[in-house]
Image (cartoon, rainbow, N blue to C red; front, side, top):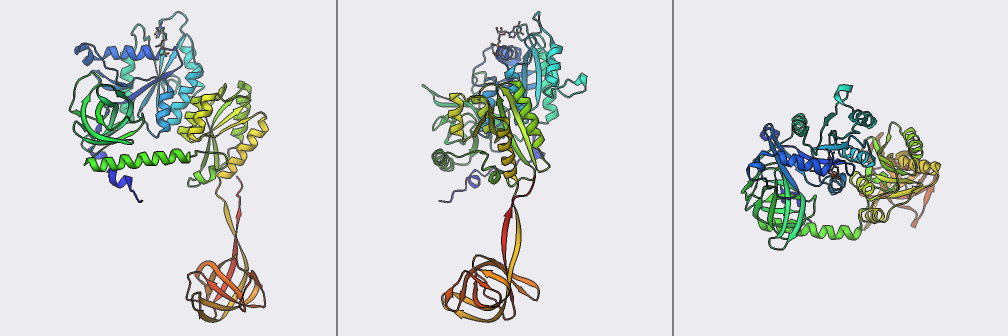
Length: 521
Ligand code: GDP
């Protein structure tokens, strides 16, 4: 059944001329206990609108903060897990990452993970050095350490914004919000409010009283109460919408998080929302997606494996092999990083998205899944959850105990990324001496092989006065009435060509073979 989803969705390209600035959407990330939740609370408390409305913020998965200089939307789930899980589903809701680093604890493993996850997504990072009220706070040490990860403060010649805050005491929060808006300005975030809305699901649940509800961040257009929508594999008419202050609203502009009711079921976080002209179309798309998801589940769509990288990436000019690396000790990481780096050539690049000491975790697998990378484990195990997710997502985890083996496998995979080069070998020529037609078979060129040989498996081209008239395959090769495998120089034969019926006396049939050779890196 031919089903053209994009034709039904009919999403027109965004016209930049109609776009207006929109608020940034921010995710807070960082190591556990560095103060992400406290910071989000402190930020929530600065919001003028919610203070005026009595300070009641609803937990719908995201909230808007209004300050004098503008508005900012914060996703309520801190950390890189949710962020990357969404990305693995092809969705990106975040414009800016705020990286929280405790000034008394410094750069820790999840700090590095957060940096790598944000970088893999291409999202700019603002660093909030937190807990500066504490006795052991050392913001400069944090800055120095982060410079190793290319996060260099402006005063040291870099372009990363660092803000010192105390989430607990509420210091530096306004400054942080100001620089987020500044960064947003530089990103020139914009959307066209005047079109059919599109959005992205950030949270969803089945509510006892209200049925399926989900929180959507509007990304384009204006979402209106009464709109017909398709959301992932669900559809429906928006019966009611509330904002993060619990207020019923009729319209939601770009970058607004809203909780919507009226869907046929509960969609997944990361699912796209699109407004459609009628319920019937929405239903058809939803049903098609549900069926496709079912089929994909059956087929267990595979992501990148070392073996089939070639077929997936052959469209690109410079190939990239992306790697998530886990190892037993820092020394192994450095050794492998160096060896892998040395493998990079003009045509194939290796990119280590994330490298850390420890077992292969679920986070490693989601990062690899979201970025089409492979996971490499050296002298480490794979935790159970990671193995399950890898199986579900079709992510390949390769574990090694010998560095040489790991490097050798990677070299082979990189080599496999290169497009094979086809070299042509001319094997012989035949001259057409007469032509005749045989019913059901077609035109036969009675020919004499003048040099080399003609084989049944050959590719051939027909030359007339030195010009190529046709190129293709041999359909049959006969001597007298027998099918033969090949005919040598000096012998006569009957040649039938696939789909070419204009062979003439005096034409030359050139036979050649294509030999596939692997180019060198
Ligand atoms: P999360 O795991 O990153 O979400 O961290 P939390 O927000 O739960 O904070 C962990 C602990 O650090 C809590 O006991 C907080 O009270 C404390 N904390 C957070 N921010 C600050 C701060 O700015 N100063 C101090 N002294 N403690 C803080």
